[in-house]
Each structure stands twice: as C-alpha cells, then as structure tokens.
Length: 141
Image (tube, rainbow, N blue to C red; front, top):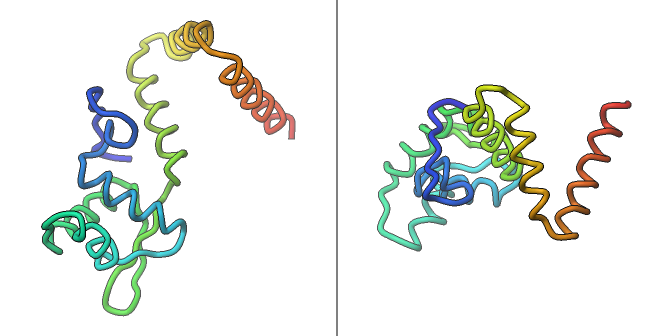
C-alpha cells in the first residue's frame, strides 16, 4: 500500500485515509467482493452531500494507485474490488505503524502488547487467547 499516512488524531480507517477516501472504501467494502463502478460509489455518496462525479472518480483512481483497489474492465468502464477487506486493512495499518515506531523491531511491539494486556478485561483476554490459539494451529499445519 503506497502513499498511506497515519493521522493519529483520527480513528479507524480515517487514521490512514482522508475522509472521502474512507467514505469511498466504506461503499466498496459494503459490496464485499462484488465489483463496483465509480457511478455506484458516486450514487451512494452524492445523496449525503454535493459531490462531483469527477471527484469520486479521481478518489477511486488514487485508491487504486495506492494498491487498495483492484480493477477490471467491464465494457467501457472499470469496476473495482477491495484488495483487502476492512479488518485486514486495519490490521495491515496497525502492523505498519508498529513497525515504524519501534527501532528494535518486535521486542518493542511485544512490550506494548504486554502493557495493553495488563489493562485488558476478561473478554479481551479471552479474545487474545483465541487469536493465539488460531495462530498456533495455523503454524502447525
């Protein structure tokens, strides 16, 4: 993913995408793996605000250039699908942030995780245990 910057004052997808980019991705993620045209995205977003078709088209092209969307021809137009689903995108962003913050690599990230786990409630701990168990099973295959 190219050209992604982290904006710590924002949360979720908006921490790494500008507002219109995040809105476009939300429309495309909502379609799952069904290909989506620029017209479809514009139709969904234009109801909320005044938005030019060309603005949406430029934003979709930028997301494609950043590696977040794949595209294929459908007649005379392109249709787009997400390269990653929303959860996978957020995980990739978190990995990039952690990698960029810690010069010592994994050790710093692990220390941060341990600190976070110390503050976790039982439900979060159960979730972490399930994730670790899934990773171990996947590794042993």
